Picture (cartoon, rainbow, N blue to C red):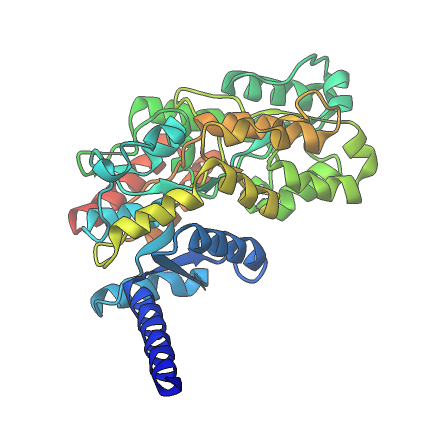
Length: 417
């Protein structure tokens, strides 16, 4: 009798072990890669991964973070080796190139039931050739921080509400106070064309030398000539623009709300005079400064449905909000999350950072990524545009000539594509 009990116990244990092995074997393992989030955001990513795995016992999500510089070579190598991750975190320019090369899966039919969770602008950012290639995740946008004391001195009673007013106010500020109005980011001027709603490439050819494009660039050239924008604007990147605003050399700064922490710390008198407002829309119907990251499924994914389930989880309202709280600098791309009290509690605040966060979150609903995608030699093409536009805006070359020469260069590259 005792022997029989031992045998039955061993049999039961054997069945339990076999069941555990079967359960482990039945799990779908989904590998997903984020882009340059570690180590700063390890905690939130590990937490999201654990929560997904707990809620989906049939799936095991395995997270890896890949450094920015290593991401594309590693991703391409994995695709070539048939070892592609199931889900990857990409910015708009990279994803556009991969979609055009057929390296990503279109997701239209897979996400039809929850596509409306995201803003229309974000969905447009992940759409190429009429097909959707990603689940929108985090975004950025610029707001305007302005020095109210300088505005008062110049007789300006409100923030600029259009590009026309932005230029006009800058001229009035220079004339009345001797301080330049703002320092437009000119390092990739194609973004300004897109902001204005002017085409950059049509039917495979560069077209930004039309009379409308010339007239638009001439506005910047005139502002440079009359001092509405500073003479060292071409050298001004993120750090230099903050320093110029904090020292009172420009009256307006195009920035993210969190960047104002520098002003709050380093230039308290300036911060006390700072007011934040949205970046005005122009003919492109989008604010400036958008740069969307999203989750895409590589064509070599072995578990596409599970990957999409994971992507939907990472990009739902609650988890986008959790990620934004962790970063303190990014904004969600879902309709509901941007209206959350975390962002909107400062809508009526006089504190520039709190108010700026609310302003930026609302602007995200219209924010597009203003980047020309799919260029065959992006570095040299953008450098040519930057060099020629610097010559034109600084008054050393006619605008039409600069644009004609750049368009010819771009089309020589596009023709060899």
